[in-house]
Length: 231
Image (cartoon, rainbow, N blue to C red):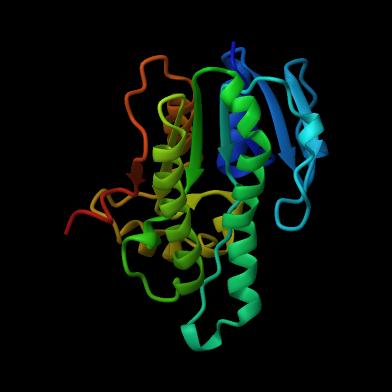
């Protein structure tokens, strides 16, 4: 059984990961804004934390962590001319600085475990030019740089990887998928003609967090129906 810090697990991909990890008998520390949204569980320790604004509550962590996943994200879609400095700062604080705060707070516990895994989340937009994605693409590109840098710095004891999905069917994406026409248009953008599920992303993330023979670090795993690589 592993000790895993899951940041942002009250809905969407994070919640799918939480359910899968608890089902596999791991002990989870869940840090999120609304921990009351998640049912109590004997192997779950909840921590109230606003990743965008607050220092991480280090004292709430165990002495050892075998894994950390940072799941909070945003979807800010506007023409560049309409993006404000506040939009860029919001995406940067939530996606990048929140991850930095969590990683710096958890580093001693990750190192104490001897071998540990970190999973971060990028976006297909970081490496594939998509209109109206300038703010979120900039933030997620920073996550990819952070992934590679930490993978080099923290090797060999800590593996650091990221997953870069396309639009996934989650509550965050609901406004973009609230009609059959919108869902069809999104699905048609990738070669598989599908919209990814939270479970599909959670399956990969949980494998990266818990696999005993994971030989990957510093990698960005595209989970986007082929959108970023195939035409």
